Length: 377
Image (cartoon, rainbow, N blue to C red; front, top):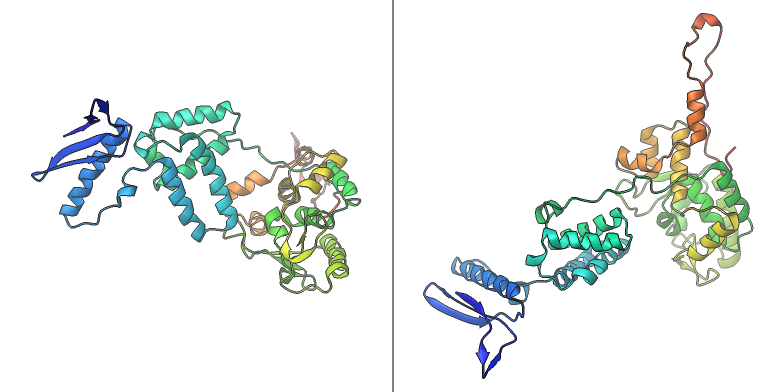
């Protein structure tokens, strides 16, 4: 049993040969590999294949016996596209494309703990966050078909920031809304208030169709969402949002005529909206201009954080918050609600070293739960 490079006419072959005896029969064949490590892996898999064949079990195709990260990722993504949403596919492709650039040529047998550690060091050197690196390696493990712990038990996941995302202050909301009134984008003028008043994800709002918006019943039915709990959830429309949506509908009717149920609430267009059968692609440019003019540095997703925080500060029950946000766990909900310092000060203002008794004549004051408004008081 051996792995070697044969010499022909004074020159060594580029590819390694494996030679061994199995059940009295001699096997000698090219591994098609220029690396000795890969050649040994080929020999090992070839013998395992012969054992499976002798036992009457199906064998793998030759092309699948020695696989690199590129091979695994390509096969995984091809199957992934068949059963996942386009956004999920884009996420997987984005994470795995980065992995392929660094580890694409590495065979699976060489994808050791040390190899993964080196990948982590490279990504950290490029100032990439721990969360992003964890997602890249996690997606790689799913492509291979085994868990992170099984593949690289000595490589721990990196710490992830828990303070990503923030709630806008009332003053920041006012500045944002004041500048929004003069925005040239009819889509942005509606979608920003909608996110502040519903806590919807930007993708959920942009993909809305008129059949999902019932102005008479005062509800919005969310379509396919990121989580199963979020899909199909019904969000009430309050007075502020009803006014915003009524104005948006009037603009839509003036431009496209009476909306059909399948028409998009936020139509597509390279500049001005032109096609109501397709939803808008992105708001990057108009959103960037709004932030610059208002002087508010935040992400569009922070409007969702702001909505969750407002609910928490008003004392909305956890169950109601989970239902409106479309979350599946309390831990995820906590990531979105950031109790602001003003609310914290109000909460501790009533704390006393010597609480007054009922006989003192002081009546406890209840803090009312106020409905969400577009312009915080």
